[in-house]
Image 1 (cartoon, rainbow, N blue to C red):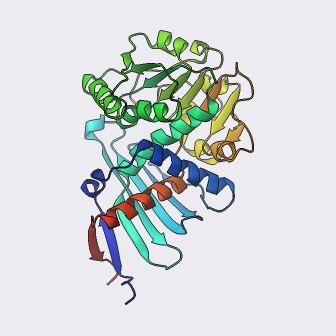
Image 2 (cartoon, rainbow, N blue to C red):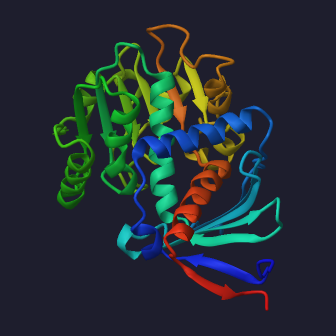
Image 3 (spheres, rainbow, N blue to C red):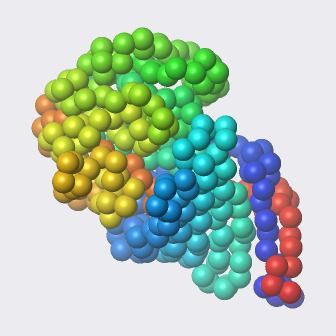
Length: 329
C-alpha cells in the first residue's frame, strides 16, 4: 500500500540529539551540497528577511532544492530579544523536507543541531580552501554554540594545525570548548588568549563566532601576511573586510543581506572575489598568493541544511525516532 501522504514525521530536539554522525561525514555532506549547487543541479534562492525597525527580532525564510537527493525543503528561523542577553532570547528554527520523486513529505525537524554542525563545517571548508599552506595556528573568538565546535571542525580539515587559541570571557563557555575539543581530539588542548591583539597577530586562521554583544573586534592591521579571517558571528572589525586582498563568501547575495554591520561609512560592502561553491568545484582558487590576507564570510545556504537534514531524517527513520502525525488529515 502506498504511504499515506498526510503523515509527517516530526523530529524534536531530543530526537536529533541522540543521532551520532562523525565530523568528517558532516564536512563531506556539506561539501557535496556546495559542489552540487556549483554544478547547477540545485537551487538556492536568496533568503527573505523580516526585521522590525527597533531591531528586537529577526526572521528568515529559505527555500531550496537538492538536485542530487531530489529533496525540496523550506527552513524558517526566528530570533526574539536581540537587545537582551543570550539567556533571555527566544530562538526557533525548523526545516521541512519533501521528496521530489514521490511527492511525499519526508520530515519536519528542529534545525538547531543541523545549524550547529553545518556552520562550523562551512568555516572549516573555508579555512581549508583559504588558509596558506604553512598555516599552523588557529584562533577562535567566542565560546557559544559555534565557538565550541569550531576547533574540532578546523582540525578535521586542517589536521596540521599545531597551536589552538581561544578568545572568550565566559568561564563556562571556555570549559565547554575544552570539553568539546577533548571529545573529538583527546590529545589536543587549547590556549586561552589573554591579549586578543597578540593572539590575532600570531594566528594564521581566525574564526570569529562571538555574539553581538562582544567587545572583541580584530582590526585589519593586526593580521599577519597570509592570514585568513572567517566571520561567522562577531569579533572582526569592518577593516578586515575592506582592507582584505581577497574576499570569499558562501554567497555574495546572502552577505549583502546579513553582513550590513560590516558596511563602510557609506553603507557599502566591497565586491566578493569568489563564492565558496565555485572554489570547491575546483574552477578557481581562493588563495592566489601566499601573502594575501583573505576575508571569508560564512552565511548559511539552505542547500547545506537540506543535505544534512536529509541525512538526519534517514538516520532517525532507520532508528524509529520521531513522532508521526496526520498533519494534513
